[in-house]
Image (cartoon, rainbow, N blue to C red):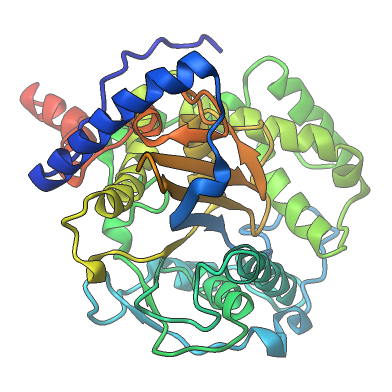
Length: 428
């Protein structure tokens, strides 16, 4: 693929009070940075105070979204739906403003596909529930036990929870919270969800007309690219799948990953070509997204980046009321959210984001200099975002990096409608 060169705009905080607060911060930073550069002294981490944590995670292991057209099928037994007792944790789902739970069209669509053994497509299994509980336990160790940052029991004044309005994600969030707070709570657990028509926790091809038009046909075209085409034919021949049935590497990988994590096997060919199937699935997504297409990446995850950015700015702004911020923000998303998100941050490892994977963003303030820093983790490992000199990234540099892709709701609507407006203007 041909790499694109993006013009980088400097980050500008949103809102007068935030701008004023951050200008003060930047003046402090300007005075402190020359001294640090001259002496080459690293930041004294013992002087850093954790102020906020944001976690974007993928749901736990599930059944495949669509079975492959082959005679041998994996057995998706209903016993896989048994809920582990330690993951039980009551919650309520509301819309983003606290109103009734939005309607979800996806779960009814998944129920239309019944798999061998009785399960439906896309259902969270007890394996996935245990994965999410384990992720919650890791977060508990990090932010309750190792660092006394969060209360040991769930406190709605400390934690904000948002999920896509899909049952496997809501249930994955429940399991994560059960592991994080060991099923203890001081108030009701509210999971916020948006309407499918305006959801931004995944690339919304239905809502964003321009994104849909840009990517239309790319998935099918990806299967015809040199290398991908030959490898796809090789796998399909090994599985005795005809060439005109619509199977591509995304559907192959979806079934393979679901079967592997549950120790199921429908076809030895999937196991034999496992590494190649994953790599070609990633290649397919990269072809569809075309990472040099800045606007497509903006429309895919720009609104989510805007949310993460806004949360950072609220904490930085001293005028923000205490009840308007949280210590922890949790966002239950999908693999197709994390891939473009990792690309925009410059930390994509060319591997498919596995079930129950997390991208964690920590915000610190230096106790003496009052400087702000961001620390990123992916799969529990420290990352260096592009544009950052070190794993501990000065906040202004981090914000400059994501500003290339961040979209406010207004700009998102404008960009998503741009192609449609152009075509209407041409009389089409």
